[in-house]
Length: 96
Image (cartoon, one colour):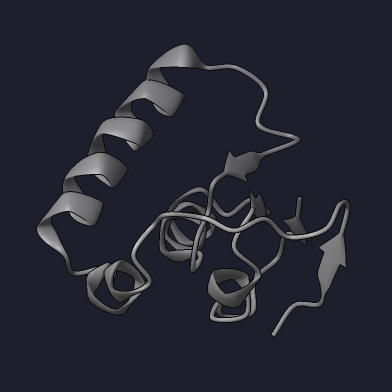
């Protein structure tokens, strides 16, 4: 697991933790959202040297992006428990 860097103390959040159990890379919503984002990134043809997923939760979308783009993606979230579920990746993790 990546170490989690604390930028500010974690906050209480209203996101149901059960979502992180079903939001896998195979979930229809995650696949659809990922496909749309990939098209937008490729169409924009902008620099992808620095990448940050805000509200990354358990890091599923972050890992999908790292896999398909071959670039590190940092992730940040208010929910430290969700960040502790993130699989190891190339980018850094932040709780704020």
